Length: 467
Image (cartoon, rainbow, N blue to C red; front, side, top):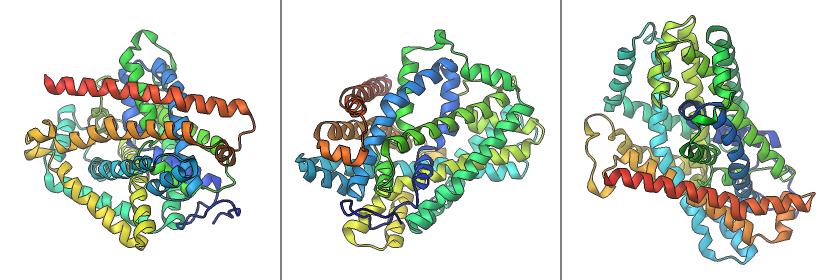
């Protein structure tokens, strides 16, 4: 437990044992399928090094400022996101209605968990498939058929969805120190070690030079306006912003930890994981001329099994890779449902195990709609869902509306309503210039860029539906 001073409220859930425990837990929340799966393929589709440079800039001016605002709200109140915003409104004299930011974030986390657990289940399935030698010398048609077979098997999807949900429940039911702290203590070291092994393997068995050149040589001719929007969007989503997860984790943050330096460290670690994942994956891709660099989402579940199946030690390395994907998803899933659990404990007085069971159970039930979005029922797209499948609709609702809107509102609330004394107390600014820069980014830059992404993506999606 952290020794709180007399002016800082205590979290009834406990606090992280140290600043580094928070850093690793928050990094675990941020590092998920977006780093291991999405970043390599969107970098591949958008010109490599030039995209990486834009992405790093977006992390600095969009992601980190909003993440700092979320942690500020959480640590200030030592409460779940709904109550944390409510406490802040009383301190700042802001409207009581701002608390709906927290409500929206908690709901978004639950919706994301409902389909995230299904996708994470694919990774679990691939771990066991790799162990059994399924991918040894597999052809492109065979790999495509294997993935298609999984998506078309509702029983398999249900089984892995249930398994992953149970795994997440076990962690969150164990509490902040023993459960969530385990993410920092065990999962993150495994994740870093697995990435290091895959990096060495890519260096020894893959075309490492081509991978490095592709990822770090700026090709600005391949950088389009859409590429910049994708970089901004991924910079926002990769840090788990707008869903209450980081605010909830901030409530457990030691009062002695410097928010700015701590969040900067989390941002750096999250970015390093994405870059190392790219350095591990691209050499393997370039060593296999049959695989497209910009292969899209299929790079993970269709193309890479082909590569692992034809390379030395491919069975072992492929198993390790999919275990890495599963653990990254697991560490993120824990943070998705923690805000709702914390709210039930604080507001309803429930025991943690009961709250965790109810929340995980609701996510599991809702996830059945995602399971039904594949296979025989995939063509069922009711008009009231704008002709989305439930999976597509939940993804659209959370990623294109709820999360960016939540992030923008958090930035504006903190930047325009926070009393100067409260900002100084939580951030401990040593320079007025630092405070001015942060407030400028939160008031104008970050919200403008996020709203821009939100508006363009909404227009694109609705235009496609209209077509």
